[in-house]
Each structure stands twice: as C-alpha cells, then as structure tokens.
Image 1 (cartoon, rainbow, N blue to C red):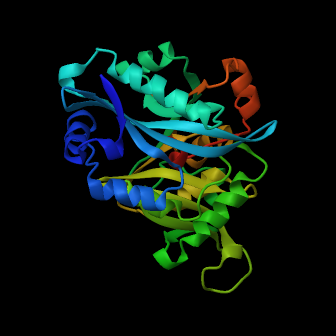
Image 2: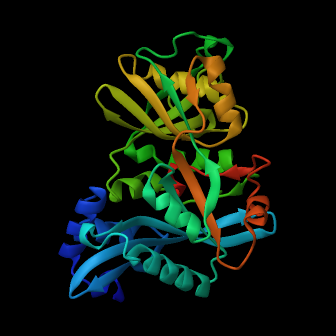
Amino acid sequence: MDIRTYDQVDPEQVLRLNLMALNYPLTPEVAAEGRRLDPRVTPEFALYAVEGGLVVGQVGMFEAPVMTREGPARAGALWAVATHPEHGRGGVARALIVEAHRRMRERGARFVTLGTSRYRVAHSLYLSLGYSDLRLLATAFSPIGGPARPGPASARPGLTASPLPSAEEHLLGVVHDQAAAGWLGFTSRPPHFANILRAWGESISAFIITDEDEEGAADRAASRAVGYALTSSTEPVVTVAEFEVVPSTDPGRAAVAIARAFPDKRLRIRAVMRDAYRQSMPAAGFEVVHPDWGTLMAASLDGTPPDEVRRLLGVDENLFNCGFFDIT
C-alpha cells in the first residue's frame, strides 16, 4: 500500500471514494475552492492509500492555532476519514492516520482533533489510536412556533434574529471574537468562516442576533450585534449548526430569537458545547439532550497524557471554546 497526497492521485477516484463512503461530493472544484479559502488546509490537503492503482482510503488534514493555559499552540485535525468498501478492516485508515500524525508532529502540532459519532465503528478505531472524548455534544430541540413553555429567558422580546446579507458577514467574525475572548481552545478563526463552510459544501445561511433594547440607529450596526447563528433547512426542520453570543447575552434568549425567525418550523440546535448554553435552554422552553451521540475527540502528538490535554484546554473548567467550524 502506497500513501500519497491529493495531488498525486486521480481526483475522480477521490470523488467516487467520498461518494461511496461519506456521500460527500469532494469534486476537484470543491478541493480547489477549499484550498483557496481555508487557511487550515495543509500542503498535502489529504493523504490517500493506493493499492494496485486504486484509491482505497483517505484522511483529510487541517492545522490551526489553539489557545492553551501555556499560551498559543498548534493543533492538527482530521476530516473525511474514508475507506473503500472492498478494503474495510484492512488497516487502511489506521495507516493513514498514523502517517498524518507523523507529518503534523513534524510541523509542530501538539494535539490533533476530530469530530465523530460514538455509535460509529470508527469511534473504537480512534480510541485505539490514542484519542479520547474531549467533549460530548448536546442537541436542543424546539417545536413549531418556538418553545412550548415560555419561561423567564424567553419573556423579553428584546433579541431579534434576522438574515445577514453577505456584504455584512464580517459581523460574524466580530461577534465570534467577542464571544471567544478569554477562552481556551479554538478562539481564533478566519473572519470569512461562513464562506469557508460553504466552499466545503455546507448549505448555510447566516443570521445576526441584535438587541433591540440597546440604544442605537434603526439599521443594523456592529455595536448592537450580540450573537449569530449559522442555519440550514431540511423541511420541516431548521438546523442551527452553530450559534454564539457575547458574554452579556443570555444564550436561552438568543435561542428563542432564532426560533422566532422560523415561526412555522421545528428547530434543532446542534453541537451545543458550552455548559452555560446548555443550562440556559430548558428555562427558555427547549428540550436538551445531553450527551447526544456527537463527540469531539483529541489525541496528543507529543506524549502529553489525556488528562493534561484536558487541563491545558480548560475542558473540565468549562473554558474550552469550540464550534461547528472547528469540529472536523
């Protein structure tokens, strides 16, 4: 088995492998756009296992900065781990991941993360490779028309969620930086992160959450933006892939504002990470499932024990910042 990079293999075989294994259309055009827009992409883009001229496995590679208790560090991330159905359980994914780790380590990455589901077979593979569940995710649900039992958090209508024109999507980066200030983990990201997600095939719409109780002009202004949401819709459910609010804003109220923007839809808020978000939603009328099947896993690349990785990233003290953009 040979291990090669994206530029050394047939992109049409890559596309077919991704369609078979992940139902993901990783076309040459998607790869080119991802490389153009996403600074996390490594020189390899992805590693591929080749046997007899056939692409039989894939591991995508990102690298990005993280903030730790000891200061800035570099983290790797794996995405789109895939194996050809005729070559399953043959050690293909393991060999690719080991090689990806080696390359990331040589470039100075201290940790590596990946997002997956605990019910998948691959979860046990990752555990055997030194990964552990860094953060179990939660999901919040709201029925049609918003929360079924309005509580204290939903009583005030001051927060409003409205579609954000593409020309104003720089506000997403402004709000993210305010929300992530003082946290550990993934505290910085490119300001055009919504467009990066779209380049990878995510059909998302951006909503800005503003506080109508704040003084200011009638038009939307950065000073009145207190949160954002990235949403997608599959009838009759709207999924919130990511939402963040500034520290002075109650997450439950913000979730109610998002629900009010879709009066005829059910709402699902995925990848709820922060305890404060999860704990505020029941008071706002949302049903919260915690943990759900989702997990963000991490492994050390320099021999740091798992408990120390958690300490460095502030996970158990609820100081760890991570969003949908960061869960690969």
